[in-house]
Amino acid sequence: MIVAELRPAGPYSLRLSARHASDATRRFRDGVLTAAIRTPASHEIARAIQRPDGTIVIEAPSQHGIDRMRFMLGIDDDHTPFLERFADDPMVGPATKSLRGLRPLRTDTVTQALLRAFAGQLILAKRAREIERNVIRAATPFVGDGLHAAPVAAELARFAPAELRRLGLGARRGSALVRILSSLDPERLHGIESDAAAVRLDRERGLGPWSVGVVFLEGLGRFDRGLARDLGLVKLAGELWGRHVEAEETDVLLEPYGEFQGIASVYLLAGYHAGLVPLGNADRNSGRGQDRGVPHRRAP
Image (cartoon, rainbow, N blue to C red):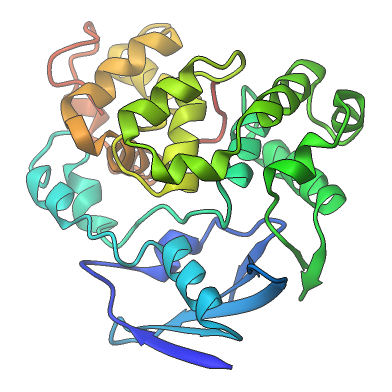
């Protein structure tokens, strides 16, 4: 067993980042994140804790497991520039102070993030995780500690859409997922520049801005594409502007954050649900100007 003691780059809280991270491939309990890791030869279980001094301690059978857990935690991707630039922002500023150690956890494979994007379209988050869990358990090997390996393209592409429908994934979404995985290995997106990766995903039927944001944030570990048109943002915008809001109108909430739209969307949603977004100061008659801003529901 290998043990690595690591200092995160910038503010980092495992408790904040992993509190909603449990799924078919990982579990966060009593301050310990336990995850099934794919290795070149097989699979293994890795664990991570955070000491009171901030040090992250990762334990895994191999160096590959250490490296993968390190990526999944995102401890090397310092988001201090985002926190500093938007500390006084009227929408995310309070969250950057109260939740400054929050970073989105990543999946072990990009394919799992793509599955998560399809499972999460237009439904409650709890139901989305249930569908994702059903598909992963049916598709991938059991590794141990109640956990299964994250899926790769071949494991999901072998399903017929009807089989995915029985597991809870709607017929259209299941067909789109199988079609995409028959022509695209999502893991290869790691080697593609962000704009090109976004274009590649955007051209696929069944994937919209929100789904691309899920793949970028949770699969690729990039902060430059956000959870655009998330239904949590629709609800936030409706409260800000005092009217019915269409999903595409919420694009103005993330636009001001530029290359930090991904991490900004995480802080906006987390801050909104924690009561940290100052709704009372908003101009409720407008969808523009300074009114910008853990989703319960998602849009494609």
